[in-house]
Image 1 (cartoon, rainbow, N blue to C red):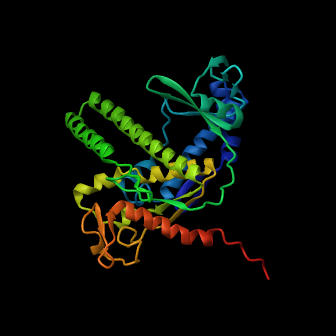
Image 2 (tube, rainbow, N blue to C red):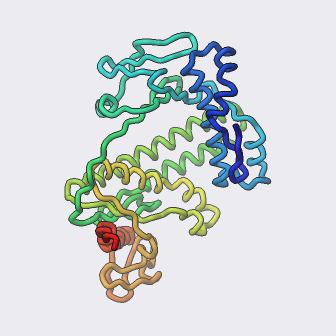
Image 3 (tube, one colour):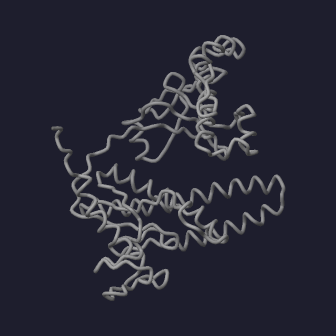
Length: 353
């Protein structure tokens, strides 16, 4: 039933189901399918824990966090998300109702609503499990939709996007999606968090949790707006989108102590994810390229030097004199680098000899 891989235990679903199916069904008076779903949820929880341990997300094996996580049983909160398959939760998209199995019997004709585009996707492409979630006293259903992606068209050129902190997404076209408003909002949230943390009361803890969720929603909304506009521009002009590959930037960059919080709350990864999936949905080519020296290289003569960027906002080539906004120049370098990389991406695979 249990196995150990990489020092972390994992559960065998079939073995656990054979062992506990009868007891769980009889003890709680469940029917067959809900019993199977209960066991699967337990197995999934422990599998996630084992994956986190193997990936080092819980620290090393001697850390306090690791010992606490691996030495205690997984607890399930009453308000936690509950997954349902099509047997336990069925959708009637024509009447916008669902039928949900509960321990007290099946609830039929439960109405739901959503945005017009969401309802259309739900009716056409819903597939697989649905999650029932309670947030802020309201109930939500999260459904999985498998939307077919159109084949990416051959781009006539690329829009280079340089993701940053002060300027969230300057492009090679000269568009500048500034992040100063988001930075000011997050600084204000940080001050409020500090005030609430000093109180050390249950009420303050609840308010901290609500404020963190609100801050996350705000940043997500900003990233959605920026990515939607960039993808729409690329689709309208027949171009692709190019961004810097910034994986592991937290380990590569050394920052002063007062800068670490800014980097850790920097939503560049989420912005890249939004650009990628929106581009796929729109049939727009999307490519990540090496970010090395894009802010120091002159797109005119190719001269690369740290002195080319005398200030954070200004670029001035020491060889040819080309000058301009530093982030826009970086976007141009990303675009130029992608033009070269795209040739190799689309190169046909040679036939085996």
